[in-house]
Image 1 (tube, helix red, strand yellow):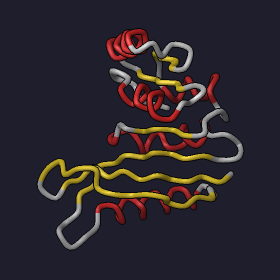
Image 2 (tube, rainbow, N blue to C red):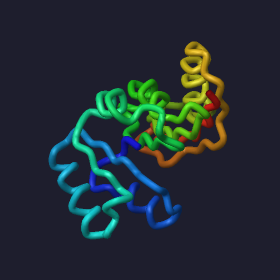
Image 3 (cartoon, rainbow, N blue to C red):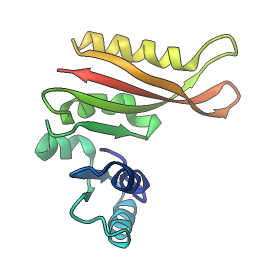
Length: 155
């Protein structure tokens, strides 16, 4: 998982889904400190592994091929980091929770626009996938939306 910050996503996963391990990566030292502190306060050490660093480097060096799910809650960087998310997934595939910002006029679907963008990229890489979920998470401004998609990847 690439979600870092104060580590709320990791802790919610631990509370509701009983994962064996959640790797929470953030490049910001203050965020990594908050992750460690919140992991301690919520008694989640051993399950949540807070990591300071660039997810691209961390996944390439030591976390490739291990994830069932990858959460990408930073919309402004998700498209750039998509290859890294795919690398993190197990060889059998997995699920990528992908967030993006998209502009769409009233007669256009921001979800479909993001699906189209991702389909072009993933098909270009020869990735077998389908979208198992998609919706507007929230509007962020006039005709701007935060979109969330779940991408089921089959290696």
